[in-house]
Length: 134
Image (tube, rainbow, N blue to C red; front, side, top):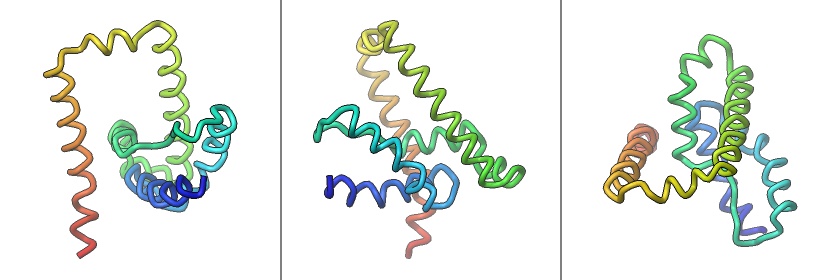
């Protein structure tokens, strides 16, 4: 638990900033879901949380900076929360209809292209912050 917490804190801050809002929000919004996940699964080997890919997708899909500029960060946090909930519901529905077996039938070249595209997208979004660090 302590190792997971120690590695999760920087991730939660970074992913909150990647999605387009203040880093502390990553900590305040993750507590209850991570606790519920831990109680529900009881497994030290399973992990649930935001990934850089989902953070970038949310920011792009929802028009992060423009939305914050127009409606404010609090409204954007509400929007990202609703978006995450809908993605979770859609994932459960797709899993119940067997979409996992469909995903296994995707050709290897398509999977490779998707992975490279995602990696380049994450790199492109993180690179400006890395350059500013120097």
